[in-house]
Amino acid sequence: MTTSSPRPRLFISLASVVLLCLASTGCGPEPAESSETEEVAFSHLVGPSAIEAGRYLAIIGGCNDCHTDGYLQTEGDVPEELWLTGSPVGWRGPWGTTYPSNLRLTVSEVSEDDWVRTLQARKALPPMPWMNVNKISEPDARALYRYIQSLGLAGERMPVALPPDQEPTTPYLSLFPIEPSK
Image (cartoon, rainbow, N blue to C red):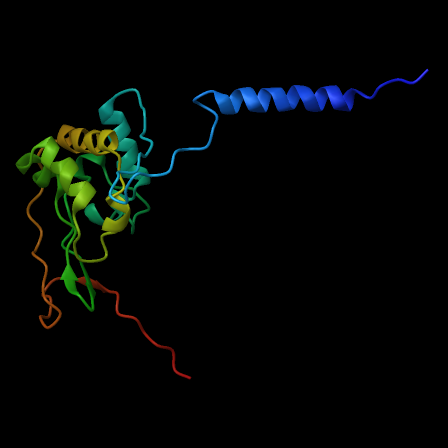
């Protein structure tokens, strides 16, 4: 008496599942993009509230690293009431000198919709990583706005960007490439 191997039945069962799955709408390959300008859908953070989600995004997104004076130097040991008030320490490189703005003043001057549009489309001077920020989802941009707004007004305006030929009068970090000697 020969016993049949369970493999052929298993193969047929798996093949049936795969075919059934491909026939349904949720398991097949994604349709090709219809145009290059089509917006890419990104995930967004879900938290207990938009404000808490925005707080988390500000922390993990590194917003405080530049936009909170002394944050990096103290390993984040800056009271939250001082967060995102900008920094008078500039970033100097071939583009000139830029300063991290006071985001708390910024959100007090723009609508939430304008904030979202800015985060998704702005191109500006280094070292701000706009190419990454531009990919933020609308819900995440709104959560970040609501968090910053919840902090209230604080701080003052930071210096405006300087062209490459103008020497800053404030402290700055140099981002000029240095070639090692050979």
